[in-house]
Structure formats: structure tokens, C-alpha cells
Image 1: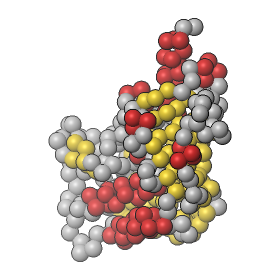
Image 2 (image 1 turned 120 degrees about the horizontal axis):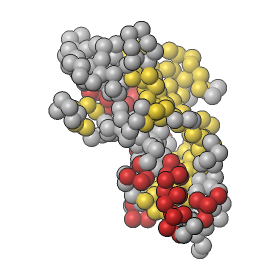
Image 3 (image 1 turned 30 degrees about the vertical axis):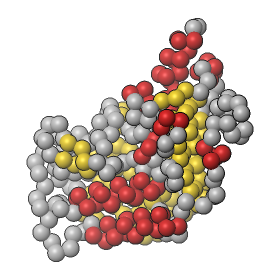
Image 4 (image 1 turned 90 degrees about the horizontal axis):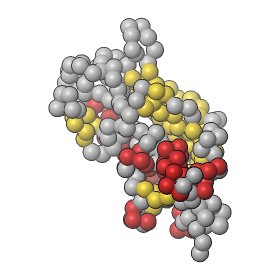
Length: 302
């Protein structure tokens, strides 16, 4: 096998490591994305591999008329949470679990250990499962390495290629992922939740429920469930759930569903992201996001 063939096999088979989502952070983005079919706008980046399809061809939702929209309490929680993250959390580690639907196909769960630092925005990922991605590592630091992702495979022929460098939003880096690594993290997620809530509260046809005492990996959380019963082109999802850790005041799980494919059917999972075993303010340094770190396996020498 030539070096070029080995590189091609690496790029086809391992780029989930090079551009993991956004966790939980990635459901949404600050920019408004234009719907190509209608010319209308909805909040957030259009996800790689397709967003909601159950509202295609639907009409607009009616404008909100209530004095206080049902989303107001949830919006306040998100705004306060964002302020708390900015003031109190500089970095954290966690085990991240993601599952995404791309081009209509729901992938399997992926597990990874992650380190995230807010300033400068920095991410280290080490893939734990499934077997085909186990051992892969990814590093991204805003403004460094030409603003590229650094990644390597875990084992086999692909590992022989060594470290590769890719633009976060390039076609190759986005292969098999709904969002780029630049959208990862609980701060980004909280910010996007604020943006979507501010957008959706302009319209009616929105139900909001709070479920205290919910648990994620043994942690006590408050679950906020938002649903849009009727398919409308204004909305990104039929139903979404956010689990806010009662102690840490951060979202530790997000899940979003499309409208059912048939009358009386079940909502269709589009994406879910969970942060487990979160440890905040670990005191990460530049070395934690350096491929020369001897605890990592990027193969870069001093």
C-alpha cells in the first residue's frame, strides 16, 4: 500500500476523530441559516447531513400573543447559566457521549474523554468506543496550528499515517459529523439554547414543561422539555430536552427530535449529546492541548 493510499483510507475511516461535534454544544449556532426552499430563516447552523424533515413544506407558526411566553422561564435559566459559566468555569473534563443522525441514518453511540478550556478555546479528545475509533486523539486550539484540527488514528494501518491537520469545517473533517469541533462545549451549547429560545418565543404553538429531580448518570438535574406540536418551517425541532445539572448549573445532556414520520408515530431522534463525570476548573495548561504532550500518542517529538 502506498503512502497516498494509506492517507486516503485514514481520511475515509477516521475523521469522526478529526471533527467530532459539538456536543452537546453543537445543536445550534449564532448565525441565522437561510432555508433554501422557503427563503425564511431559522436559528443555527444547518447541520451536516440534514436537519428536521418533518416540517418540510409546512406553513409558518402564528405569532405569540400571550403576555408571557412559555419559554420565558427556560430562557431566564439559560441566560443565568451562561453568565455563571463565564464567571465560574474556566475549563473542565468529562466523558462525552454523542449520537447523531446523518443523511437519514442514526449512527451508534460514540464515547470520548474530553478536556475543554474556554480561553483560548481549546479541545482535546480521546476516543474510547466503539472499537473502530478507539484510541484516536484530536486537538484543537483557536488561533494555533493554523486554526486546524490535529488528529491521529488509534490502531491498524490508519495509525501508520500519523498525525493529520485539517480545517475544522472542511469536507473531510466534517465527514460523519453534524457539527465542527469549534461548536463543542457546554458554554457554546448554553449560548445556542439562548439564541433558539429568543427566536422561538416570537411564535405560538410552543409547549414547555419542567421536570425536577431527573437524573443523568446519577447527577440530579432539572429537565426542560420544549415541543412544537405542529410542524412549522419556523422551528428546528419537534421536541427537545435539556438537562441542567442542579449543582453545576450547566447543561449535561441535550436531545432533539424530528416530527413523527407518520400520524401517531414516535418522534425521530436527530441528535443527542451527554456529558458525564464532569470535573470543573482542572487548571489545564497549554500542555494539555499540545500534541507533544508525552501522555498523548500523536507521535510529535520535542
